[in-house]
Image 1 (tube, rainbow, N blue to C red):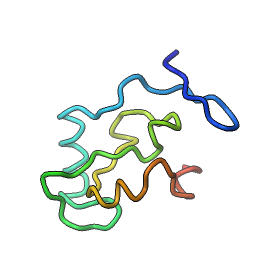
Image 2 (spheres, one colour):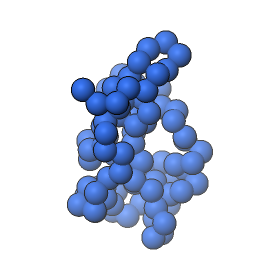
Image 3 (cartoon, rainbow, N blue to C red):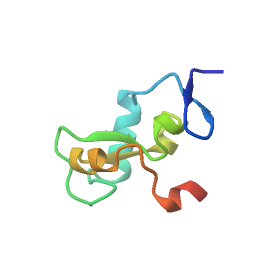
Length: 88
């Protein structure tokens, strides 16, 4: 069992690995053909590997829970989850 993040209503087990590795980042980039998963703009070298389900909410650091985003979209999203992502 990993570290625990204490939330308002419940405790969440947090994946001890927060950053995507180089292989995972390359796979995320290829998956969207170098475009932001949120706004579809072409990614520049400062793109972010974002957790779809936020790391702080128990999201795994794995390509199945990752998406490439431009810094603007990732920082705007923060630790929020899209309504549809909660039920997939």
